[in-house]
Amino acid sequence: MGGNAMQPLANVTQLKPAARAGAIEVKNVGQVFRTRSQDVVALEDVSLEVKPGRFVVLVGPSGCGKSTLLMMMAGLRQQTAGTITISGAPILQPDPDRVGVVFQEASLFPWLTAEDNVEFPLALRGVPKAERRAKAQDALKLVGLDGFGRRHPHELSGGMKQRVSIARGLVQDPPVLLMDEPFAALDEQTRMTMGDELLRIWAATGKTVVFVTHSLTEAVYLADEVIVMSARPGRIVDHLQVQLPRPRTYEMLSGDAFGSLRDRIWRHIRKSA
Image: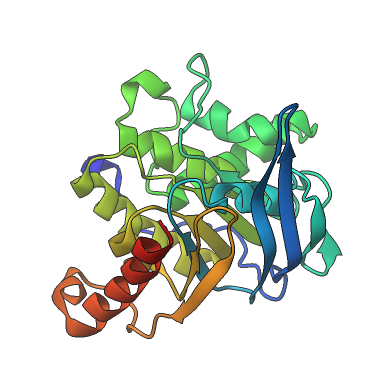
């Protein structure tokens, strides 16, 4: 998968680390979806705190509201109860200065090159062309796609498309990066490679990352902390601190500590399913 796209980072002008910004606070959040026939309680009394620079993973059974919670953190959906603040201020609408979002599908414009796709949010904000091109090139270098900027999406592998999507989420240099199952459509080998790439990018940028996944192995491998949610209405039923050393290695997957954490998450999910 895109192995030839990897470039050494020693001479790359990286995006500035987000030092102090990026704290997320969720207090007593609830979400009710109202229909003509009934009200559906998706989330109920959810509270959590994410400290700046942490890598936090949300897991839970299908339909538990973890993606809904992520979209509320992004300002793309408003909660019906409670508050969400990011970097000390409420998030009431999308705010690319504070939050970048990477979705499950790369959602690239097929008629635009990789560079143009990464530049797109900057173009919407009226950033001068030379400045946005330089920022897009820096972001593509950071995700290991230096030299691929003029390629169109149909010329890229699935993993490379997701790298472009991550670069687009990073290009405005927000302190927080929200990721909604970004590797779900990839094969297992590519998914593991992308996980390592994401950890490299996270270490290089200092971003606060909140990552949604259904994969318990992926959750433990990536995270500083794992938040486990119950079946609908979604509530937090466990909050694990992952004390495995970094950098993470594949050998850890077969270790007792890794297995114990994964089994603990699975017991909660099985119980609430």
